[in-house]
View 1 (cartoon, rainbow, N blue to C red):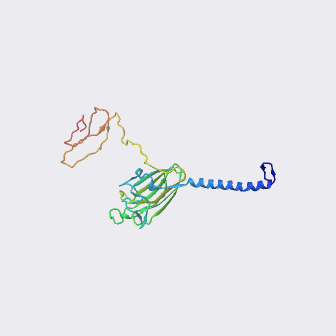
View 2: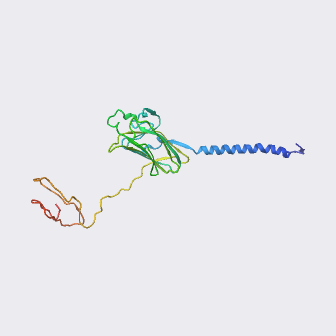
View 3: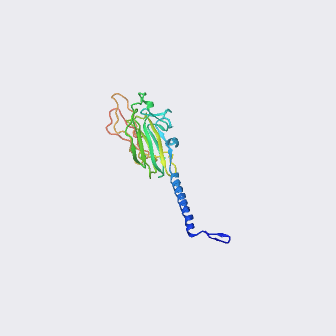
Length: 258
């Protein structure tokens, strides 16, 4: 090192020695910031933490971290501490807006019904529907069956629907567990939403001015029994009624249709 009055200078070789550690320090700092920023965006939420009041089911209410009868969840003799206990039939709409990455769960029929002869033979099926497409189905499951693992890719999915469908006509009594159910996401958190309300449709035809008979064309009773029948019609009034070949003893009121 050489000196001048009141000022210190460094030779070119020494300046290079000072610069090298500085570059390495900046690189390491940027690398650490980039790594932290990448991991901060990943998150997950338990299904039981969402608003279960938005779900619909055939009986009772979905339970957070318990069976639908408020017991510890148990599938095939194995207990689970977290999840949602439901009752077939069940549906839950979850808004993802393309921010979720994966849904995982362990599903099955809760062991609490195994001693109930009224419901223990009622199977059910779990389904995961992503944007109107079935992404997972368990097949029919019975009480005592081992739990089924669920893993569904949610990348790009806007709405997920969790469904429990009862098996058999009129069978709606099975107890279903979405055990250990989690949604991984990178962005806005998933939100449970109410199912869409379908617009009411009038299935009966609208009345028209012209007379139209809307009842059965053939009516009968046992011989010897009285008959009182009104011809149900729509159309502008007044109108006249007529009938051909009435059995003996019957008459038609032309004004009322009786």
